[in-house]
Amino acid sequence: MANKKGNIEIGYRAYAEVCRIFENANKGAKKMGIRKNSIYEWAAGSVPGGHYLALLNHYGCDVLYILTGVRNSGN
Image (cartoon, rainbow, N blue to C red; front, side):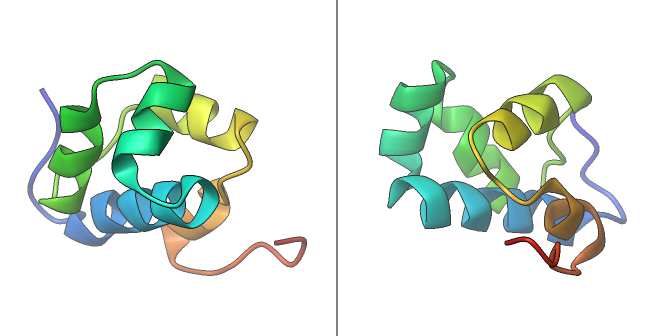
């Protein structure tokens, strides 16, 4: 089960990165082959697990930003 306490910003930043890369959560979910509800749960405060973070990184999301709120200098 995803963690909902203390790291709400991480989930929201993951959602925002998906929208930045893919235009919206639905397109991102389809492209990455995951449930769109997973992405909407992040927006509501759930924290994506490591396997999702690896997938997000593969598709060009800034995982450093997701985890820390600081943009990677390359993005």
